[in-house]
Image (cartoon, rainbow, N blue to C red; front, side, top):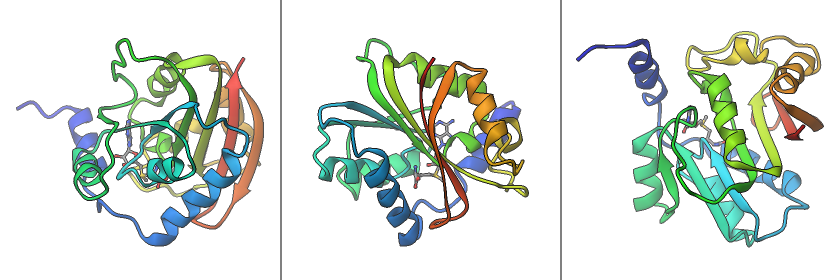
Length: 200
Ligand SMILES: C[S@@+](CC[C@H](N)C(=O)[O-])C[C@H]1O[C@@H](n2cnc3c(N)ncnc32)[C@H](O)[C@@H]1O
């Protein structure tokens, strides 16, 4: 087998524990409560980097009827299916996953995933291509993160290592066709930036 840089990346991304500590999931629930306040229950939602699907499960418990996830870690999807009873998760890399003829999504939600992307440029382009023109994008990222772990591959690309009140990361998304409608900083899980965006 030829070991490409992507193989090395994938091995690193899928080496950690399948489950996270409870406070990590509490933090995600708090973010969802706030961010999804005005989203109608029939919205088609894609959770990018959904891991074992606890965010999806919480969204469903709030009454959301059309919740899908994607993750590149097969172990987590199996856990979600078998232990969590959560279906609707696609296995793949958001950067090149073929959504084929799936209907477009009204909300793209991604919590602590894009900093892991191997190719964040393609990841964001593909996220945008499966979203309706008026879709909401909710992105949560570790911020500021001046000393990222090697698994946080795209931190420097996104500018998450630069502590400037989110200006660099906002500009990164702006030059890819996104308008930021809200930014919040939070510390419950770890220092984070919560961004709400729409397409230009
Ligand atoms: C730190 S976990 C975050 C889980 C959950 N969203 C949360 O906030 O608790 C990041 C997840 O993103 C997934 N991931 C990383 N890069 C990805 C990519 N390019 N495409 C799809 N999933 C990815 C990882 O496998 C992992 O399950």
